[in-house]
Every structure is written in C-alpha cells, then in structure tokens.
Amino acid sequence: MQKPVNLRILRVRKLLTAKELATQSGVAESNIYAIELGKWLPSLATIKKLSIVLGKDPTEVTEFKAAIEKRAKNEKTSKKLNSTI
Picture (cartoon, rainbow, N blue to C red):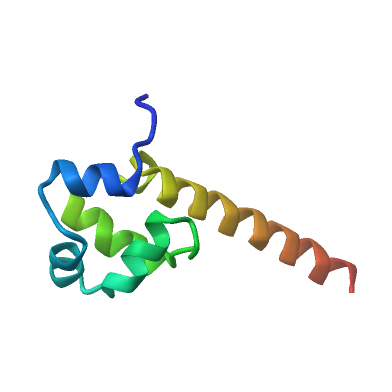
C-alpha cells in the first residue's frame, strides 16, 4: 500500500488551482485551503467530492485519511458515552 499524499501535492500534480478544484468538486475554495492547511476537518461528503475529482481513493490522501480516522474515533467515543448513560 502506498503512503498517502497531501491534498495540495495531488492538486498541483493534476495541474489544478484551488479555484479549479473548487469549481469541479463543488467544494468552496476557502475550504480546500483550510483542509490543506490542516485548519478544517472535512466531512465525508466533502472528502467524496474531492476524491472523485482527484481520481483517488480517500485513504490515498493524507488529510482525508486522517479525517476519516478521527471521525471514526469520535463515533466510537460517542457510542461508548451513550452506552454508559
């Protein structure tokens, strides 16, 4: 399995500006920058939209893989808390 690659690197390899990626994916340009800078945790819907345009599985993109793992961890914690109440 290949090591995940950063979103910005993939975008540049595809010769896309953030604005072009935003237009093609329907994700706000500011959100793309925020994801690239690690300032925003993308939703699963956002991850899917960007992955389709980039032609990559979400686990191949560093920021997407981290977001999926964090959301899964949060969901487990939430379920655990709810079961103790």
